[in-house]
Length: 172
Ligand SMILES: [Zn+2]
Image (cartoon, rainbow, N blue to C red; front, side, top):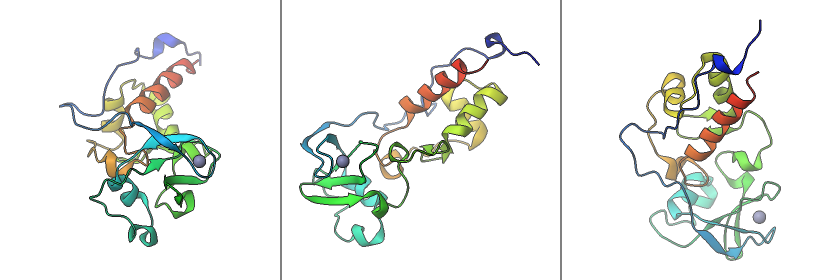
């Protein structure tokens, strides 16, 4: 069976919610470098670090505080969060962070647990090209708890839409 690009509807620019939510889409650049890899990460909230850390680590974090933790975004570095010399490593986190996990099935939307392969499959096999359409068809309405669910504390909007575009481009 022969496919071509015209079989797919064009890319639909969508956010995660119909009504517009207050999910953050960017973090401030950190002014301190990761003690492990020396790269500058991004500032995340205490609530994000608390929510993503294992039980042991949680005891040391005031979830309502604002200490200025940073997330290290270097894929090969096993430090996830840092605050001065104090480190929370990827194996002290409650879930895997897709940037530091090379598996192709890694999670993109942490609120609804949608992974990269599911997004590509929804584009290729269900002919869906809008983020919100894919979310609703696969899992339902997003709860928008990105600050607690996503290791970056951010909405997955940018990455989700990028994967849709790549899936459209690879549909031949
Ligand atoms: Zn690092």
